[in-house]
Image (cartoon, rainbow over all chains, first blue to last red):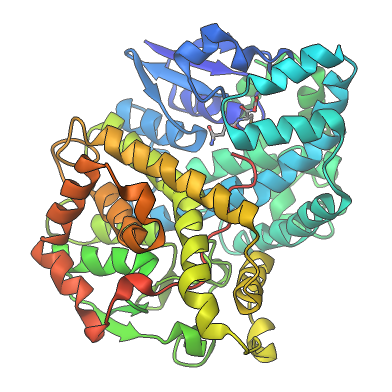
Amino acid sequence: MLDIYHWEPNANSGKPLLAALEKGVEFQSHYIDMLAFDQHKPDYLVINPAGTIPAMVHNATLIFESTYMIDYIDMAFEGPALRPADPYELWRMRWWCRFFDQYVGPATSQLGWSSFVGPMVRERDEEELKAAIERIPLKERRMAWSKAIYGTFTEEELAESRARLMSGIAQIDEALTDHDAIAGDQFSIADLAGFMMLFGLPVMFPEAANDERTPNFMSWLRRTARRPSVQEGLSIGKNPRFAQRFQELLNGEGISDA
Amino acid sequence: MLELYHWAPNGPWLKPLIVIAEKQIDCTLRPIDVLAFEQYGDKVPPRSLETRLNQEGEGPLLVQDGKQLTESFFLCEFLDSAFDGPALRPTNPVAFNRMLAWARFSNEIFMPSANTLGCRQFLAPQLAGKTMPVDVLGKIELSFVREAWQRAYANDFPPAMIDDSRRKITLALDRIEKALIDGPYLLGKDYSLADVDAFSISRSLPVLAPDLVKGRPLWADWMARIEARPAVQASLQIDGWYQPENVFAPGPEHSRWG
Ligand SMILES: N[C@@H](CCC(=O)N[C@@H](CS)C(=O)NCC(=O)O)C(=O)O
């Protein structure tokens, strides 16, 4: 039995969901409301002591790291391969996954958390929020929540994140000049993980991602958005914000590119 | 034709050297003097998009028939998947997931922390009184790599940064010690890329943080066992380095998000 504990089909939470749908693997979905701090509650910490989402459990074994949950699904189940057989393309897939997870991902999350996640929870009782922050197991996550709630992301770090996205999206665009997919010509984990990390960007930060500046990036996003697994995955969400962004992406300019 | 551009057999450079020796891969080794900034000169071929943006900071460059690869762990995965010789990756999906989760933890938490201590203790004193060559600075595309070099030139390592690095090294050592309870290797009964990675980063710890490695019998025994492997011995003796464990250059960025 495969259990996936996730929030919205966005960023890390979306990765194992889409991978399971892409492979046609049956799973039990458990919605964890991140804005209600479900991920730090004792019941959940029994499943994933790190207190992060997503979590994935297969035959009573916890599988770590959203990007590598996709690897696991690919290895453990039948269905279309999500990893290239060619060693160099496999390396390219890893390289770009790292770029998404470590370089552009944190920058995107920082913008999202300062403009959306923080304001969504900020109005709650002060003591309750303080206690909620203290319960967070990982130091990096505790810091992110504290900055989001108290609005203390510095202008300098937000500017750094924007600069990273300006160059980072242009670099992804460049990588897609002579490939249909991130790792090569075959759809892989890198497309799935990158899409989940970045599909909101044309709405959230249009200066970095738009049809004039980064046409390859935009048509890659739309190509990926049209995959049946992605369409189905996006319908699992409960918060209209993400479905809306997804629609806006599909409704945007350049819809004709296949 | 396969070529590896590398510096001293320590940290990121040590990992592929070990894998090449373990698998007896036919590879031309090309030593590079990182402190003379040869990696930004014409001793190495003009860099591809990905390798210009090496998320590892300074590290090895592998070239196979014009294709370039960086990022020591993933470069080792490439070597293991592209060449014959003893397999260094598990075939069991759970063990494979543990290996990749280790790599992510190593890349974002362990390696940056060991590297911060190493740059302070060994790199900064060598750069004292000097300034970073302006033409080199202009060739480094990633701002965090430029900043890490400048930090070493300025010997600017605030106590909070050192404390945080020591905290994360403790996490890494705890994680290794725990994994070795079932041992004899990190993923269980078989030696793997997780051992190559963790060993290569751990090797400097007795000089960087002697107090933190005390009282870790499983770690100490495992280190000695890996060090005794003929392939590891041969790698450590490459180019006749004296105390390669003291050789450091700016490495990957500390995790910004968790
Ligand atoms: N490296 C982990 C990171 C997981 C992570 O940080 N997830 C975020 C959401 S995208 C989270 O759990 N946030 C909730 C919290 O920090 O409380 C992975 O990829 O699975």
